Image (cartoon, rainbow, N blue to C red; front, side, top):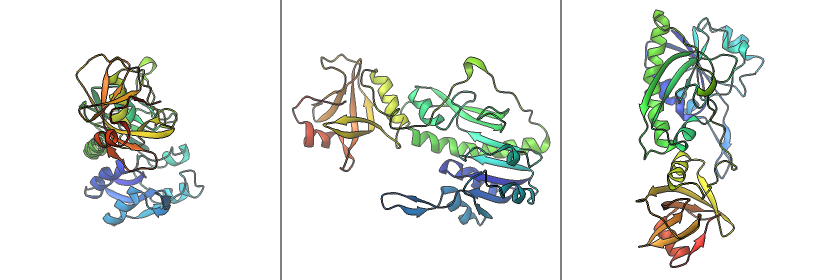
Length: 309
């Protein structure tokens, strides 16, 4: 099958690699141009560009899928299908060019967690099962007909980074399964359920990543791992932002302290939640380097009873 791949993020790298090593022909890889990144704003290529260069694939750097020159250029390739992974919404005039249309890999069990951040929100919600959906792109975001869906257990100690890596790898195999099924005519698209089964995974921002200490220890534990390694859960400590990189659950018990109170026990950093304490294993105070909870105790807490906002 003749394929055009459109993607930016690291999630799509295993799928691109899998395509390149398969019997399918990758006619072009479309990704964003290099952008300034990091503290020193160094021009940095997307993970997809880096992988395409390693694989020696034809590379197009396009600022936007709405580029007016893109439809004509794509038409000339005579591709059978477009594969879209971690890429902006492509307009109808682009996705309808190939005979088999455009398909997308989404790391959730659609129609659950439509939107840009399904992996963090599935962990934050405390889900025990997650999965991957490959669907045909339609007019509504993440609402197209399902071509293949596969569920997997979600380990309760994984963070978003671990889950993303796992789902990226399994997606690569599922993509080849879908392309083979489409070529053979053995896959029948299934409309997504509607109504109460639909949920959304909004973009992460400073507003929705702040810890609410009145919630239960279980909820806050899930919140922290769902936002790790990025963008990280945070709170305010003595007027500065304190990011919580890793937390651990403790045996359930009551505490006399109000939610948000921090103290030390046997050198470990504890915080009171709505129903029980949580151990803060690794933190990052604004302007400092990431340190362990035990190091934070030595530097800031010792025998004091302090508070996070």
